[in-house]
Length: 141
Image 1 (cartoon, rainbow, N blue to C red):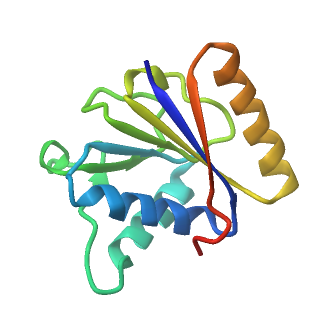
Image 2: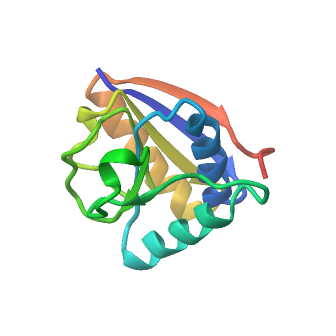
Image 3: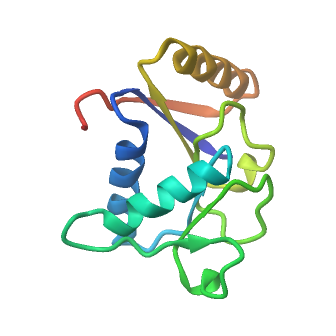
């Protein structure tokens, strides 16, 4: 069953995501970052090209010809047919395919609307019996 990690109190959601991707990159763990729209997909893509400042985090879009050889996929499509290890959800709602993954990562900022949406997702997962773990990301950025 999918284990769900909530990183709460994040000052910068995308900075936390980049840090998590960098941490998993050494193991080449298949990871999918689900964004809410094309603009967010572009923003995450640009961040991963520039982070860390002295390195590069290999990533691509789901439809890239390099997808089968790349550990991190970024896209806003609500489907997933590839490897299923870690899913990072940047959307307000639970992804319809999250249970295919071994681990789901939710990053919640201190913004009131984001906290409310995060609590609703937490409740959704808890009511369905998923293992939930909370991590304070407030000091990460």
